Amino acid sequence: MELISDFKALVSSIEPKPAHVSAAKTAHEKVREQLQSDEESKQAHKDTFLSGSYARSTAINDINDVDVICLLDINHAITPPEVVLAWMEGILSRYYSERQRQGRSVGVQAANNVWLDIVPSTPISADSGPIYIPDREAHEWVSTHPKGQIAAAVNQNKATNGYYVQAVKLMKFWRDRLPRESSRPKSYILETLVYRTIGYPTSHARAVVNVLEGIERTYGAFRKTNTVPTIQDPGYSSVNVAKRWSSSEFDEFMTEVQTAAPTARQALDATDEATSRRLWRRLFGNDLGQ
Image (cartoon, rainbow, N blue to C red; front, side, top):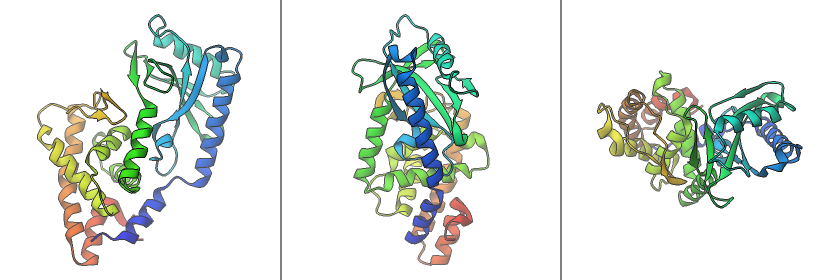
């Protein structure tokens, strides 16, 4: 059964709280203004914009971090990533006492426990198109397209009558309940898997079944082959979002999918409400139907 009201209530319960959304908005607006007006950074500043699950409206529960892309007028061919990250950290140190230089960003602790990840970047060509961002570990710049990712999510959500974003939230909630951290894929990998498999559902329950069965059907053959399939970024097809997903982690995740997919199908096909809810709760816990 589809248990429409149960799933609607579950989605509502895992939405970020209004206070968290407000705090995140205040924090990212402040750092964006600082980067635009700072005497040092404003010389190279072109734009700032949001990225990540917060920007794509796919975050659940607490908003753990907010990604801010800072578009700069720099020549990536002669400027090492680590130099730009160090420069960005120096600027942010004037405004934030707690900060951390990371592989592709500088993280800072803003007010109300909001963590901001500031990602320096430079356009590949047009300011609205793909960008280069640092990869400090690899000592190189890598290409990505955050605005393309947002546009792909918006378009997919429209095509599925709003089920795409809510299905991503449900699948993140399911993933977070998996017993081993190694079986839980990074959020954007999971979002991309939902994007690739959701089809055109008519309910939350059918969306979950489509995704789980679609993942198993599309990627199940790669299980236990010591190979991770290429999974193209919906916003920038030349990027493989699974390139850092280890084969052991992929296998663990796919084992969970192999178990979950038939359970979801049985729950959907069940004609008795109590039986259906009991099966769905194997995936989503007692939060479903409360």
